[in-house]
Length: 294
Ligand code: GUN
Image 1 (spheres, rainbow, N blue to C red):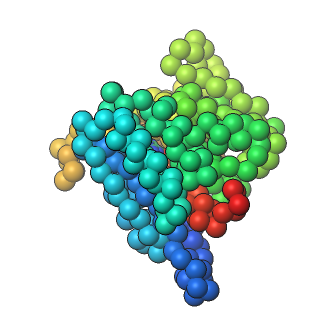
Image 2 (image 1 turned 45 degrees about the vertical axis):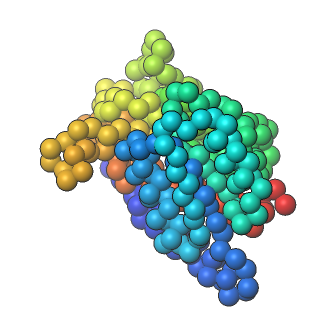
């Protein structure tokens, strides 16, 4: 009965749409949008994510700039870089890849970003505007998950959605967006997390489960009711001798046992992951077109 959500195909479709828009913009004498990425240190996952963001920019005709710092960069130097990007009229939007080294305050760095260029949607102004239902840059992972729900026309109105995870950049905004008066949304939302007592019982009541906990294979078949929709936002690298990279990507859902129960399920890899980058590109397009902040 289950439909496996193909995030790769949806992402390819949206990327083609953006690429066509860029070509039209250039034909009309406009300038290709420009995304800058700031990468501190050499964390393997961050390297991979940033490389994928830069590569995607190239694929759809955006310009990109990669600015690198070593792990021992001081906060002041990073703040100076952000100030420069805020004032660089050639850069439409930029991101600072997280996590940052311990000695740097992520909150301080994020607050230093001009919210009109904050295409990650992490700045408190964008978070506040999202909460208020005002136009803003939505964080890419939640926006990508919602886009999949929309693309597959999955019914959400009046449904019970259980979000597992309460992180600032995924769980919290997802819960917020799933309760908003809109489509996707209009759900009754429960937010569960690592300290929840009755997590299994909560999940068993869910029509839609969105798992964003970062614990590989956490969601098991005995936590899911027949016909539920399961969206897996987990992405953990596990060591593997079977791959050339030395690791494999694992989601938060025990896919093989959960999938047969679901009406829809998003896999890892190939589910929400590819959509995250597409959402970042959409935000960059909007930053360049100044549709949100004229
Ligand atoms: N680290 C993990 N996910 C993200 C993201 O979406 N944006 C940034 N800047 N860092 C991340």
